[in-house]
Length: 365
Image (cartoon, rainbow, N blue to C red; front, top):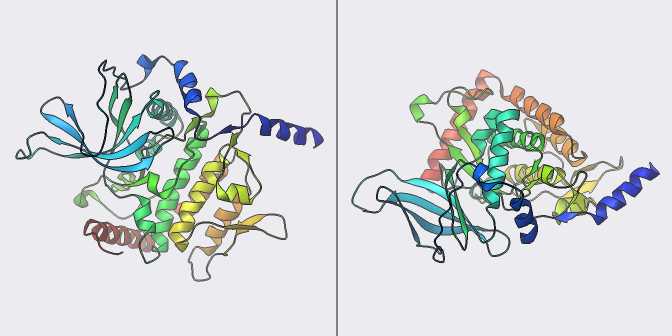
């Protein structure tokens, strides 16, 4: 036990803060052969300064237009929401939506995306659907531009900002999606580091006539619904770092539990926080129980249908060290089993259909 304590102290010294520093990203990127990366395209020219309203020309009289900034990255880097459209506004060509990352140093997001793509194809191909596809990349002399395709300009933050709490059955649906992502990320050795509501976009890629009642397998169009991650600024591929490296973080929940270093636990608490925000409309706060186990400050509401399940979810993940991917997968299976009745499958479809309709109309849910 004493030996373990020493190790822990040693770990504290060699902890690396997230997001990784600019120079460290460049150093790690330099070990890769960029030509091995899918989509890596070199454009020798300088890129003009990118700002809202900027138009990036594409072949076939198309262009990418920067609509608005959605998220700050580290070191003056930024994520924008962008649309791809015809240059000629009168032609009725299709439009596409992107989260577009502008990076000043190396193509970090593209590197993580590639690593994740390769890893997920191996560990859980279905999770690939939750990772926004990389649709465009250019390496300019002065910056790198990566675009990830999304289906809706709506993030989970907009669900959290609604005045009414979300239908519990819908929270379960998003929770299942997040747990699948969580166990798959860990099996790939990747810490995303920023699974917060504004970084999670809603995913809706199915036509209404192809959409049936909910099914855990993803049948009836359900594999095309859920969430997308399309930003990787804070992500870390642990296999690039010396074995046993810890990450240092200032996540309020981990700090409250006295944990200054972590690996996958950072993603665990980020997911719990999103779930808590959807259930309760307030961020996750934790207290230590008499049994020295951490628990939510507010215990599950008596009227929640799945109150025991929610209790188990928070209890398990707040008190787990990294390495709990199989536990996360079994929690996912329990939520899926809970929803696997004809009545709940119909109810869930109706609830999601209503949510989508109201979001499209810009109304309160």
